Image (tube, rainbow, N blue to C red; front, top):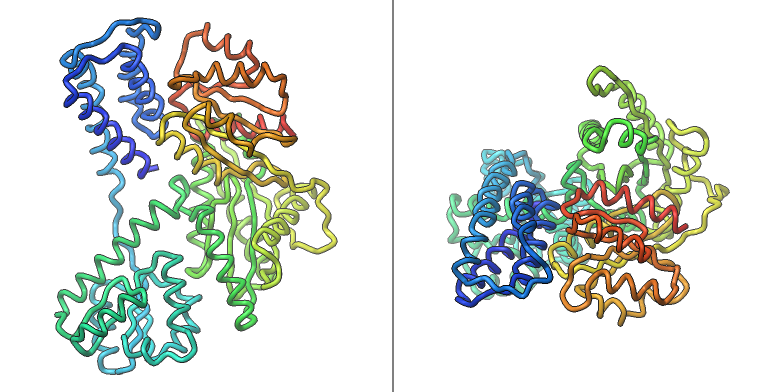
Length: 531
């Protein structure tokens, strides 16, 4: 969410500066749309106070008015909300500072004295260092160590006859791991070859130890920022679904290369909806975080925990058979259900159910996930609070279905945020999600992707330039097309506007700003209705 906050602040500042420098009057309708976008997005990304100030200003506007505000009036009007968002952004930046943890470096150099010296220097900096004198030894450990940085001597790259260096580079690129080459010479030719190979940095003989450590530190910190913003689920601290495909590819490749066992576990919290309904979404979030942190504390460093969507998680376990994975997860289940949650005077405990499958080199990632999901479905059907290993004779009565979701919103940040969240969203059942976004109603109607016989859920912004959300809804319903389920995303709190949308056939509405958790709950309900 932090990247969306930053992008939102930058976008609003750019628009504000554009208005200030324009020195022109601004129509009341245009100012209303600016504040409407500001309010809806600000509240959704976590700037609630700024959204409230924008809401207070909106109540004084008339959308049908032909009035214009002078440049001076506009600046004075917007100053208050802009000051608020800048202040809140500064607070968020302070809150998101993290303490450093030990990082793993893979150090590969053919000279033992050089290797020992650099290993000692890096360990003084607080790093865990795996040292190897040749690529083949490092290759064996590459999939087990999960390094945060790979440092390789250039001569090993030059003399590599088996493509090991290329494979290491490909893994580094896919997982944002900095690849640093070192050289015992100070050669421009070697430096050019190293960067052409794909190195993120090249440290020659002329680099001092202080500069060496500084540049390594910089690359690892940069990787940490990228991984946190791109690959980590903000609520639970687990990896997100973007990381899943890469990890499964490596597990399958490793199986094909040396036959090592690996397992995939899919599990989710039992009766999670009842927790949200009975105690509220904040308590539901606490349960998710506590389960995630508990498993991250109990798992091995080489195990990977991924939040698959909602209350569902995936755990990838290298060097583990399905039988071993079932025992491990059952132990986790026993430990977690012994923990208690307290809400006022009431206490409750939580269980989860899981499905396990052996990872192989033949099945696709999608097939492996479907098999684990089938085993999870069996665990639920058997009474929950248990773990089931997938067997080929398990038959899921529900065929795989595709759910199309269209996001129609003129605000770029809102479109990007919703699309990203929905792509990670996994509804209950054997479904897959396809998401597309549109900046206006016209482009939505021009696209054939959502047309045809399949059902489509449309998240439709109420206020858009040219074709208003109400107009889009009216057109959909005038075509008497029941394939479209429509949720209005509206900043309008007027009962008249909401009634109008419902009369035209909107299936649900949610008022900006809204929480992503609430939106997911409503979407889950609408999907159940569609299916």
